[in-house]
Structures are given as structure tokens and as C-alpha cells.
Image (cartoon, rainbow, N blue to C red; front, side):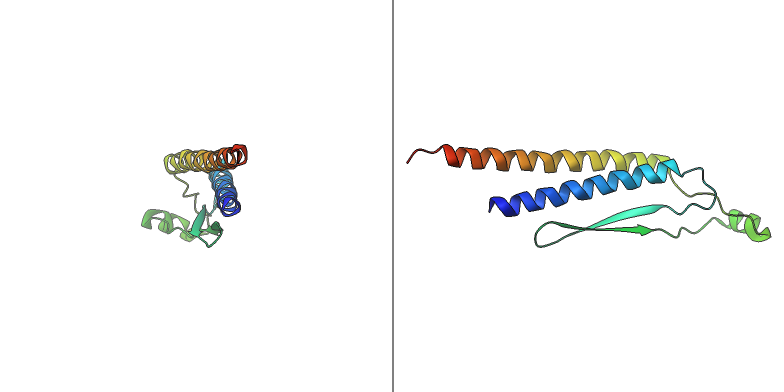
Length: 116
């Protein structure tokens, strides 16, 4: 049981780290012309979280499409507020999984301290 809890918490930590890195990548490239935003999708698996990074093909506004008809690259469609919220959410996800690991460790320690 403890092993499955640890596996789930560790995969959650990895997912949170990847989400944080992806949000930072999006923010760092927000001013890059033609940059396509990346997004992390997570799915609950049997022994933890399955993670996948995808590039989003955003649709430019009609004004941008008209302006880009001359061959110019479209600007980045990264929303800095949305990425900041994603970073904060990833931080909380990381903290929750870290707390899960600590509780499992304390539980195992308490079980080992029981005198028979």
C-alpha cells in the first residue's frame, strides 16, 4: 500500500514539475514571433499520473490573419495571466504531492514504532 502511495505521489511531483517547466517555457517565449504555446495534459493512471505535452495550434484573430496575408509570422498567443495562474496551480500540485509523501513516510514510521 505504501509503495503505491509513493508511486502516485512521485508521479504527481513529476507532473507538477513538467507543468511548471512548460508554463515557464511559454512565458519565456511569449514575445517570440510565431511561437506556439505548449500545454501539459494529465490523466489519472493505475499507478499514478500519465503526462503528455502538446503544442496548441491557436487560431489567430481575423485582423492578424489579414495582416499576415503578406507573409509575416503571427505573434505569439501566450496569455501571461493564464500562464501565471498555471504556474501557481502547478506549485500547489507539487506541494500537495510532497505532503502525501511526508504523510506516507510518517505512517510507515509509526507502523514500525508499534511495539508488539
